[in-house]
Image (tube, helix red, strand yellow):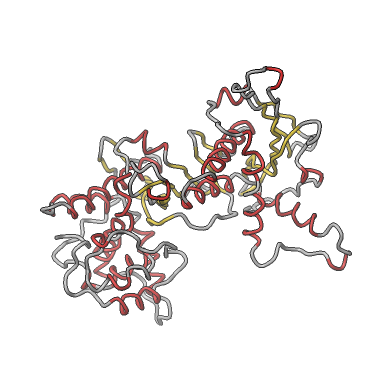
Length: 457
């Protein structure tokens, strides 16, 4: 076997490897997910005792430094940034993060299936590993490995030395074991795969996270038995002279939500500075409807992914300002609090997670196209130009046989302009109902605090 599935006898013991992983623990590199795949995913006897203890990318870094864990005769291909052709796609400067992630997932699936075939197909596995390596962001990965290697080292190493290629190749070989448990759900059709993806991209357009909803057994109808996970493929723009390509810097699982402002791509829409309030509201309603659906029986990882997408659409600074105003409402001036406590992000997430239950009754099913939804929307901007209320008229319940008894419900989505890095985005500050008894979201009584230029929410 040529890959990391059947590692040679030079593997370290579980305790030694786990110790190495701890030494390599760096937030910029490490994952938050433990190995959870079948035993066949990691067949080195020394690794099995630590299989549930070590972070996945820690294993990748350990393998990069531990020569006994890869076959020395497996030469690393040249680390050359160039256009890659695979599975009917050309990954050149015009390729999207979704396209690059799609090719990566297919190559990782080919790697796993070739390794687990009986008899194994070493040549097919080797070809898959080389394709995976051609998609790597070499310099970014090298910088991160070097950052870890230089912890507590004096003098620091300036580069990875003559074995740079071998270490990079060893690193990328570990991506297949990370996702091995879920490869049966990796789509071989780009359109089908894209429907399972959503993207968070940095405001400067230089990095992105493609999230892919996967399952160990996609044919299983019982969510509790499907063993779902959301794979996080991190990409960066890698430069090669005057050209730049989206390339892979890390393979991980969905982590904690961030208040950092991002460009969001989901449900076929890109929510950047050109996105309208209607487009933002449409993605929000789709995401909230998914949260409401999963709350009735979805797997934990699916609920987490839907909640994180909703959270990425929130105007975090405005919500924080309103929460603080509510807390300080009855406090004397000398006792006003300035922060939401030691974990402000958790408080923000708790506030945003109330949106789906609040609207759940009127979001199922939400199967409108963008144009159908927009036809039911009305936008009323506030005089300050930084705030707008979008009113969405919920389609009447057609199951009600008497038209006069069909309830007319209008949702109220409040959006504010968030300024980050010289760009302005519409994001959501509050949701509620518009009607005789509930005219506007309760929090709208407190005007939003404009985000300071350059502030990342």
